Length: 336
Image 1 (cartoon, rainbow, N blue to C red):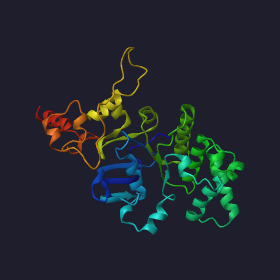
Image 2 (spheres, rainbow, N blue to C red):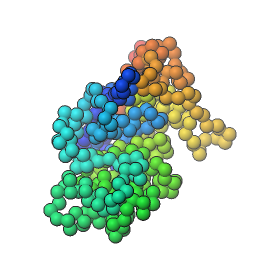
Image 3 (cartoon, one colour):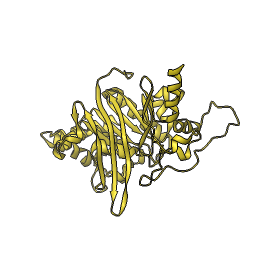
Image 4 (cartoon, helix red, strand yellow):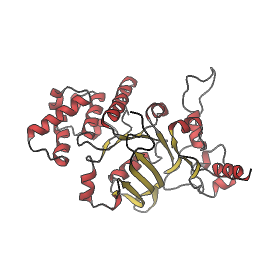
């Protein structure tokens, strides 16, 4: 079933800011005023280079930040409740039951000394409270079948699964308590191309079959183009651009988005076209540049970019970009 922009709103994140603190060092501003919405049945792609804050954003939504992480500002409104205002006990009831996460690197996320069935069953017991061990086992078998694993393999350990099967087991675990939202943090990392395609196809099939809303963290713009309804482009802990997927690919406004797209291989491009790379490196989050965080690498930067952080401007309906050039274009259009 295709996603509808008028579908019920599940998640409304506004001005979310996160710092990492360390002794005798300035705080690392991992997120600054990030916001987005997620509707029923929607797949939101979150893209950007390593270190831009994607995983921090996902962990913040689940309130699973490491000990040195601090949510300093913002709201995470899930169906009328601000998750940041809940007690830890209340938040525990939300995890897996309402919002579940497929963690990056299934081999590291799974416990090597417990069977796959035990690990999926643990989430069911903790959050669903099924009355008997037989009921739990039946649910484990049902989940494994849903993701394409034979139920009899529930008694095996993670090392007895291939990389693709471990990822399927992680998906089964995320679905154990029938959540409304599933967060997938780079679910195809370290898998070969064919297995990646199978995992992505499985996620999309489950989204349509179960009516899930999904957040997909990835570096692969091809995956975003094929699977996502909307895209959040992040850079240096801030929102660079946020828009429907077709708008991002056909009418990108932020220079960072434009450079990412230019660096992505395109089989329809003319022969002889060379791929480009973005010069330089993402900023250190505890030593951010003054002004726009992308300015030191931006081919279109000008004086103001190096002194003032741009606000997030609405360029069209459902299209936002944080760039001084966008603001200048908007002013020129209004003056015409």
